Length: 183
Image (cartoon, rainbow, N blue to C red; front, side, top):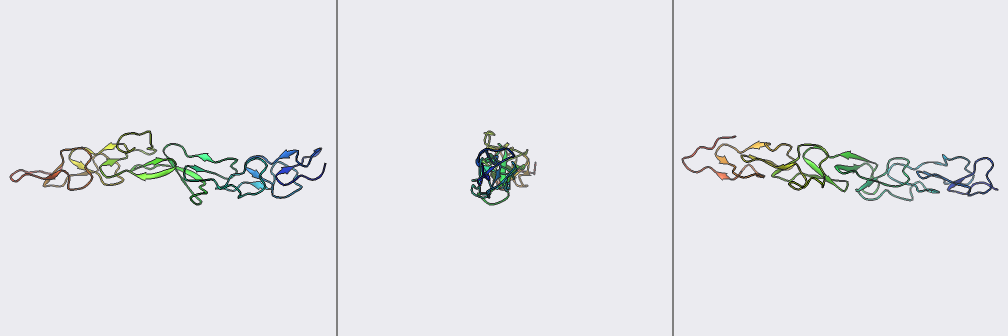
């Protein structure tokens, strides 16, 4: 039968040097392997299809996917998560999107001024206010990455009569002879 070829292993009683391919998530870089552990598991950031001979032949890919150690194929980032670790092409894990941010296709984006992100895991299915939780309330303004609809009250001398204000200027100055206090 002969020794196993690279990418394969031959357990006792094998009849062919290519009888058993190294399982997905592993690689066999040398001839003569005799069990399913092959040479080793594929390193994090890379994936190894069945019968792989090189640990780093297949980079995981862009930010929309990641590969933990022993991956047979890339894993697509879950909605509301972004990928980290490694490089842009070899991400190793995913992390839940923090409040004040939303995540689309494995990438994290800050909630824009005038909006807020109150909870973790916001993603593209959250259709309100550019995928964040919503717009800031009247009388309040929200800078980038705000976490509450009442993040900052409009300052004394200014008023806010619309939702979604993104600067401390709010809607404008109070009319002469009128008092506008903070909310």
